[in-house]
Length: 257
Image (cartoon, rainbow, N blue to C red; front, side, top):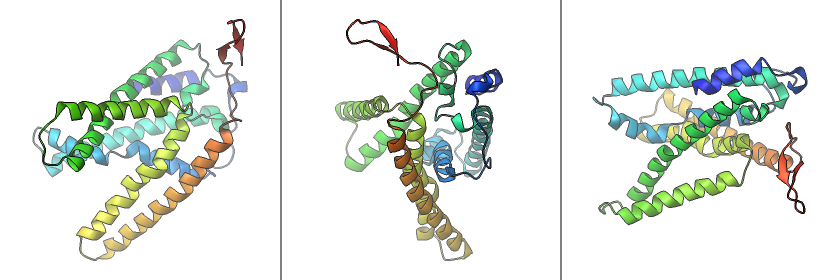
């Protein structure tokens, strides 16, 4: 993550003027604010890993878990702000879902950052698959002993599904927006307040929880509509900032698309 942030900040200052975008409108309130809320929520959602992280503590207590949570969230916030501001202030309205795609393909430092990003995704997938596999096992086979064949089937199906979906899209921003609009909004704004309303006694905090649920539902609906509309609109009209080489059908030589 440090390599990626430093690369965007350093190489962003070397981008030629013709590749920079315009900074139009407000920096914070724009027409894609609801999609941005979904992406931010997706970046900070880690509720499904909470029990595993709590159990991994040497001395699992609520105070120690709260300290780990606050420190990790603060570090994540600083990293996200640094990357987002450096990318947006450099490329403006030309900023792509994956800001590394705004840089040319022959930039060595950016390519190293792309490699680090791929390694980050490579190590993140098993962590997410572990939680999903654990939930599937506990839901469908709650009282059965460990079965290596079932373990292999669940793991393979999760990895193959994720691989298939990743091969079907080239716009990482659209993926973040769609997932953030659905699962992240549900995990961050809808399900926790609903649990609080169900398990706690009625007080002024209940009204706040209801408001958070309403906010989550509104963000989810608007974000899903905007994300799907953006995917359909940009499917055939998204501009390519750099030439893409593809093999010619007859000669086998490379042509610039």
